[in-house]
Image 1 (cartoon, one colour):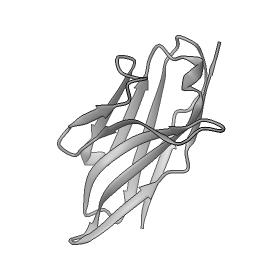
Image 2 (image 1 turned 30 degrees about the horizontal axis):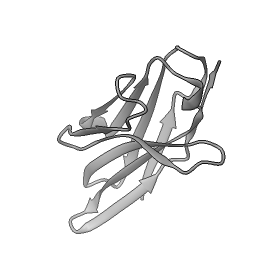
Image 3 (image 1 turned 120 degrees about the horizontal axis):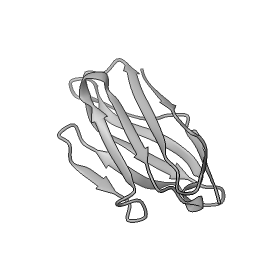
Image 4 (image 1 turned 180 degrees about the horizontal axis):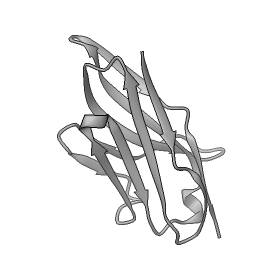
Length: 120
């Protein structure tokens, strides 16, 4: 069993900054890609940013140049630094992780999510 715990959400004024964290714990043999997704009311869940264990990063076009994803492999933790926020960034932000609990036994888990609200 693997647990993902997100923190750092809240209310911020447009143009402000927030930093989200997601810590994975439990039976982790190896961790591969970790990512942040978001889901706004009435909209589909979308990828915000992902980072592999080797440091390869993908960003959604809507956040490029404003958000930065980083990772601490020793702590199985990822971060999302959100700068120059916009009201359209308002959503529940969810952490996702893929890895192995033991050789040849993959896992794929979601966190509970943390609410980010950007006021105009």
